[in-house]
Length: 561
Image (cartoon, rainbow, N blue to C red; front, side):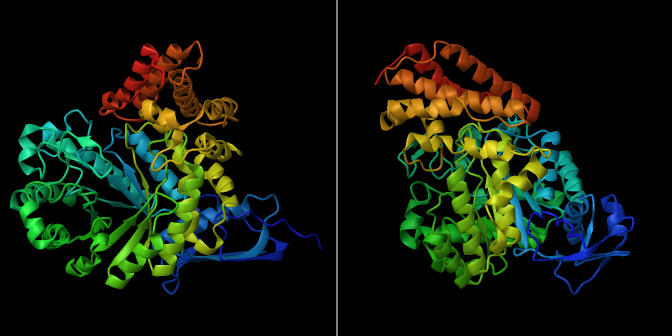
C-alpha cells in the first residue's frame, strides 16, 4: 500500500500517529463547522485537544473553547494535503499563560486596524493574553493636560478591543504603570508635586533627566493612582491588572530620602506597591501583576506582598539571570511569569541572535522553576522607530517555546511565521531575521539596542568604536539583503534607516559618503512619517521625528572625528 504523506505541523504536536489509510468523508471547512462536530472533555487540560481521523469518521475533543481554536489550526495543516491521511493527534501547552505586551506609550498608539492585526497574529501564534503598556495614553477625564497630544486610547477603544479579543479567545489585561515612568506626567507643572525628584535626576547610566519619573510614595500619589485605576479598571473583564512599578530609579533621592534611609528603600517601595495591590483587590476584585526588577534586589520583601500577586521577571539580554531570579521568586511562594522581549526596540531591523538566545533561556528558566507562563514584551524606546514585522519572528519563537518548550526548534520559526504573519510568503521571515543580524557585522558589543541604531542616536560617541572597514562591510551587506515579498513599504523604510545611519557614520569618520546623503535623510524621514500615519494615530509622531534631528545636524555640519 502506498505510504501517504505526513503533514508538517507547527507547533510540533506532542503526539502524532499517521495511519495507513486515507480519509474518505467530508471534513469541516471552517472553524464554526469544526466546533460543531467537537465535544468538550473536562478531563483534558483546559487548552488540550485530541483529533482522530478515521476513513469514515472524525472525532474532536477539547478541554475548552480555546482548545478547539488551537485544534482547528492543526486540523487545517493536516487537511491541506491532496490526500488526507488518517491518524491521531494530541496536544496541549506547557505554559498556562502566553501573553504579549505592546508598548503604546513610547510615541506609537496604533489605529484600530493595526490593533486588529496584532490580535489576529496573537491568535495565530496561540497567545491567550494581550496587554497595552500604558503610562499616559489613556484619555483619563481629569488629566487632559497629560494626554492631549498623544492621540490616546479612549473607553470606547478599550471596549471595542476587548470584544475583538474575546472573538479570538484572548484575554485583554489592563495595564497602567502606577509608580515609575511618570515622566510624561511630571513634565507638566500641575504634576510636579507628585514627583520624588521634580527637578530631574541622573539615571543609573549617567543620563541627566530633566523631569522626575517616580511618584513620591505618599498618600497624595496613592490617591492619584487610585483615581486612574477607578476609571480604567471597570472597563476590563479580566481578573488581572498589570500595575507596572518598574525602574523606580530615583526613589530615595528626593522627597522620600529620609524615610528610605530610616526604613530601607526596599521596604518603602514594597509598602507603596502593597497599598496599591490591596486597594485593587478590595475595590475592584482584581489580582495584580507587577514588574519584579526592583523587589528582586531585596527578595526578603516578597513575603510582604499579597499572596495572590503575580510577579513579572523581565530581562532582554542573553546573559540575563533568568534562572537565579525565577528561583528566588519560586522560593517566595508567589506566582510569576518570565518576560523576554522581541529585541526590536532601539533597532531598525532587530537583534536576531540575542532575541533567539534570551527567549530560549527565559523559557527554560520558566519551565525549570514553575513559571505560570511567558509574557513577551515589545517596547518602543527612543521614538518607536522599528516597523512591526521586525517583531514577528520573536512572536513565533516565544510562542513555540511557551507551547512546547522541549520541542521548540529554531528551524520551525520560518514556516510558522511565514504562514501566520507573512501571508504564506515563504522566505519572508528569513529576510527579516537576516536584517536583525546586520548590526553584528560592526563587531561591537551592544546592550538593549543594535549597533546600527546606536550609531543613529549617538553618532559622535559610537562612531569612535567602529572601524571604517566594518561600516563599509555592513553597508554593503544591508544594500544587498534579499527583500521579502510582503510588507514592502516597511522593508524599504527599514533599509533606508539602516543605510542612513551607516552613511552618516562614514561622513563623521572623514570618509566620502553617498552624494545623495541629504536626499536619503529626507526619504527616511518622510517614509517614517508616511508609514506612521498609515498604521498609527498621529499623537507621538512629532516626538519620534525628532530622532532625525541629530542626523540632520551631522549631515549639514560635516563634522569629522
